[in-house]
Image (spheres, rainbow, N blue to C red):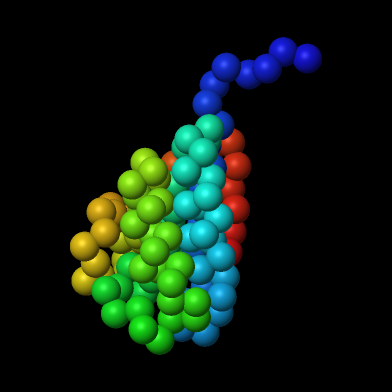
Length: 117
């Protein structure tokens, strides 16, 4: 079987509340691990209550270390971070862009894989 020459891409959709669930932290750790290998282009997209994950104030998040340690590592590894444009403004120094749901749908349709947390 011939191997595809096109690079693999994955978008990690994060919708869970980081103050109530561990799933956003798990998504960030997974994305950082994938991005570190540089074999797949990884994108994080935060929507709904998960947009709080980009807040500078993460002291009350479940598994706080994932936000302070792994999100910056994810970006340093070349990962891209997007936030739903309808979300309230974030007070984050982390590089991110805003996307509408329609823009996200167009982006996701071009990805090899989609993971939802």
